[in-house]
Image (cartoon, rainbow, N blue to C red):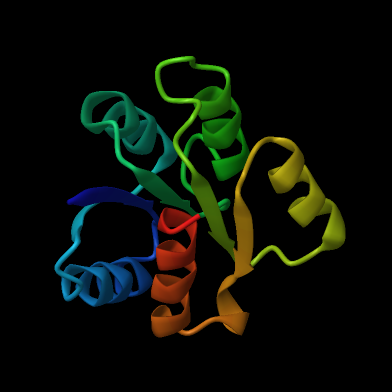
Length: 123
């Protein structure tokens, strides 16, 4: 079973994605509501994939991503950024910091997000 950590402060969206992923029998879904909690859960839980929002209370998603990729214990965990920040410089910054994919929230349904996750696991 693959463990997926969702770091998202929007309660509605977080619960929607958790519900959608929980219906898939291959995934165990855990969540965090801010960057600090996310980093703590990454180190404790060692998820197989991280779905990361960028605009978070406290430590933002770019800083979370930077800390993940600079920690040898967790740096190999794939990260999909899920954000409303759609400017090219934000996308480039996320990919440069080590994200595997960058999804703009408004452009993807929860079902499409699940498909992106499956694609990363099947690479």
